[in-house]
Figure (cartoon, rainbow, N blue to C red):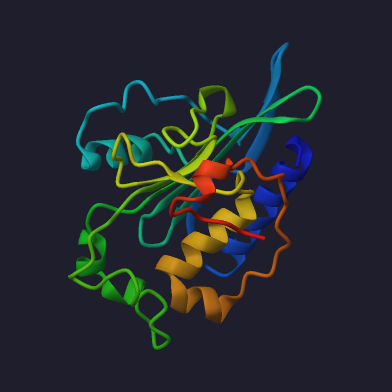
Length: 217
């Protein structure tokens, strides 16, 4: 796992989602660097993490959407972020992978044919009973604290102290497969998503293995 392989993987993912009609808008990945690090983000990227603290989810979503701060905007409005930081030796220093579902489906109510064709590709995400839940994967070993703050973890719903341990950082292929198979299952199986994941050594601790955690082999 290095900046070039990650950037190439995100580019393939983006192109695939465009080709099957799931991506409504996108910013292709780019590699930038300074004296210490290489960053894989996207064209037009601006770090807005400070500005988005402690505000309502709908405002977070609208801020990101209006400023095109995403790698991929899915057809139903869901936003995907795939951000990585490496040192110049090629080691992964940080990652942040996010899925921001649209807080409402007003556009679906106005134009249901946009989502539901005869194959019902989007039936998974437009039921009235669904509560959109943002998902974030972080890898930040410098901030790690055994059990309390796992180096690699999954956060659900923007809860400050929700850090479900992961066995290792995730590559973009694994994360996007997880989002599509979990929340766009019909489209995922109909369109296919056959890409090889990029493995990273395990970072989970012995104590974290004793907790509920997510693992991929």
